[in-house]
Length: 345
Image (cartoon, rainbow, N blue to C red; front, top):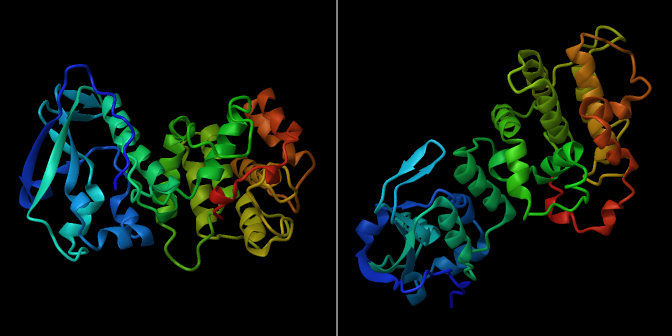
């Protein structure tokens, strides 16, 4: 049976209920914070649950707007109807993935006045078959909060949370002082780097051949921070990141540019044998990210070098100020926390 946390109903409000034909239901759109439904539908347990029609599958929750709502650049008119709970079932029925398609569904309408109330109501549904992963939540937040639908697999799957979390730590080590990704704070973390995420989504979307760099968590974190430092419209930095993506190396001289040093290390793993998402290990963020940023900085200043220079691991302090000293001074052992769920390399 479907479990649901209590919905914060206003006093003296009775929820409207009705039946709706399946054709009319198919015409409805999802609420803007809906997860990546198509990706969610691929989950094995979701398939097992929704491939066979059950009576409880007919219960659908819809949002009915009682006022006009402006959300970013999008306008939702009063009396608009959107699906709060039942989007994955709709996907299964529309695509013939269930053994039977119902002729009608049982509707409960939830009155909604604000986008915040819509989010709260959407989050209140906690179905035993929902199985919303962190990646799906992130996709939904990007879509609802920033009207942004990522194109690349790396960003759309949400496989950048460790990179994002360390990037926020670099800017604000007081608020983000533990290596564990806290999904309660992920909304603020996304907002801090939304422009950088959009740029990297575009670059990663061009990463579709075998001769492309692997955008692991340390390289993504360094890219987020470089874009924050130099700006997302800096044409030279964009060329740098695209050249890294294309694995471009200049090997005709012993004095090489920053892109060459980064690509060569990422391919050969000479300095960092096993890159990891821990914060304080020799191959963790506190070393791998400054390494990349050091060479990006050299590239941006047209400096070629034979090898890395002294003080390279202080670059976060140089770029973002004294607060970033917390990164070097951090004594928290990453393996004391459960970060395995987010360590997607």
